Image 1 (cartoon, rainbow, N blue to C red):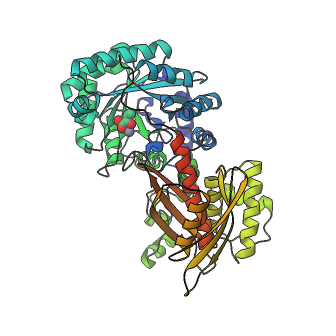
Image 2 (image 1 turned 180 degrees about the vertical axis):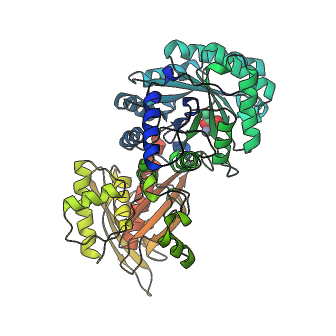
Image 3 (image 1 turned 45 degrees about the vertical axis):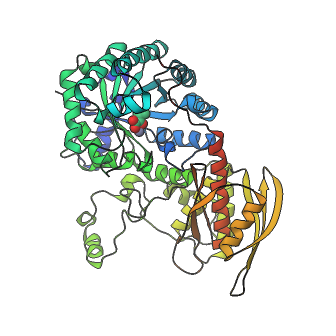
Length: 548
Ligand code: KIV
Ligand code: ZN
């Protein structure tokens, strides 16, 4: 038995249904089916995604990302965990003010303080949701919560009922559901439904389940829990065994009608199910999977690049859908087939996910209008100030480099997005390198606009640069990763550098690109430091503060 979503709860759906139908007809893809097969897309990039070790986003970045997600027609945006920090509260609160189409959701543990703080944060939303959760597996209840099962059950009822008094739209999650005893899971879900939850999320918190087992859990709950017909069941899959996307699809086959996903699959440990992969799997295999979403997939590449730029997490080249090689064909036999008919080796078109088909070279004489068009084609829509700054950077780059390729422009814009709001900025760098050591770096940075300079030597030029940064910005962070790759071919190619720092268990990453590898290294390190300092300002919540 599959449940029928109550469309009145999701006013956009009827409209989406019509739009998707006509878009699909025009593209000749699978016919749209019944509205009961409409899948609600719940994006958790800014909540679970931001919990990735090393990922952090500023308020402005979150606001911009929420606009991108809304343009993409994501149904629910989980904007943060309001009690976690003032920064998280503010982000959820501001996003609730600017987002008008998507539902804005905040996370809360099963405690009075959490739920009330969350309700306060989402108050301005046109459509707001409180997402409250508690662990239900034996191992979590015993060691994490130190609560007896009956007390957990009681907390489910009370927390959902309290949230329901503050907001109409309540989602309840059974943390570690896939390692929960079935009978207890059924009792908890029943309690949450009775108390007023409209969405029941069944998280695979530690990425433990496999597809057929996950589908079976949904079937069991939908068939056996009283009231299950009146709620939407949701998947939430982590990728510890590389099964997050497969499990999400299987959850839909078991009767779920909401998927919780993150752009580029970022999230705790190995990450969450990648939005772009689940959504495109549903679109491409509409012939066999009778589900559809309202996502306008041509925004996917833009969202992916933006998330990569602001978190400093590079997208691996062979990543499905959004990787640099996702639509590249190297082998001669493949290229030959592609030239005859793209369908020989492509199951979707690059344009479907917003990847520009061309790699046109731009020269230094390109004008601002052409540059703006190119950015659009590459999936960026910048405000006037950001556009002016990017154009200036492009001109500077074109002076240094004979040909500017698409990948150069992507690196340049990502670099500006990643470091634009940084309090510490690299101003000048001069490095003495060569066979005769020690190598020396003279560095000037600005910290909140105030210049600071110093020099340092090191075992090699990169070491000298990083030692100089230590002198101008004293810190205890340890360098965990330093990675360089060339953005394009040729000796004048830009170097793209990724840096990962760790301090007291906190991890932060940074990224930068420049035609000068040492400048890119300095900027990436400083970008990581900025992210680390921003992360320090956010304090993660401890164990449940005030339970029921
Ligand atoms: O993975 C998980 O269990 C979660 C919950 C808070 C929904 O992220
Ligand atoms: Zn999660």
